[in-house]
Amino acid sequence: MSTPTTSRRERLRQATLDEIHEAARKLLVEQGTAAVTINAVAREIGMSGPALYHYYASHDELVGAVTAGFFRELAAAMEQARDAHAGEPVAVRLIAACRAMRAWAVGHPAEFGWIFASPIAPPNLRRDSVRHQAATRFEQVLLDLTVELWRTRPFPVPADLPGSLRDQLTAFSEGIGGALPPEAVHVFLSCWIRLYGLLCMEVLHQLDFAYTDLEPVFEECLRDLAGMLALDHPGG
Image (cartoon, rainbow, N blue to C red; front, side, top):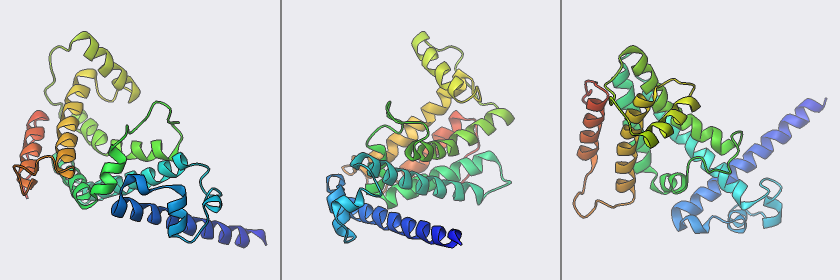
């Protein structure tokens, strides 16, 4: 007899959590990061600040949960684009995921700025936290495709890496179970830096002095990345 009551309580709690997240998002988009406070979010949904602490014990916990939600949304958009090309060459799926990332970023500049304004994995972030798990899901989209490519059609890698760089890339390689050797990690991260850097500059309007439409520039970046990975760049 207790199961239906518990289930209803959980549904009501989840509905409130969803409302909290939407209120935080609204404040972020309309007023900026500083506006997303416990009391402001509570006011948006007609709740007192102390009452909201029944759902999140601190502002940091609220921020972590909202950040996780954005990461999940971005990852889902990339996964959907990737899966729309299931069975097609990895180049097609990889480019589709990259394009989906840009589409989400351009369509949600405030949310993109929120999740990338701080480290994806701060040193004090627990690996079992919802934020860490959501960030990992996002990271895995492009990493998994790169690993698949490496296993089926290895791309060119540098013949030698400086000592300090090799040590760092070796640590990353070990952290992903050796799915990519350090040299391949170097190529993967070089691609990521170029992709992410361009998106940040676009979303933050750092290139508005020269461009009114950065899509051609993004496509040129994708062609460069495809060259680094020895892929044919899919058009369209």
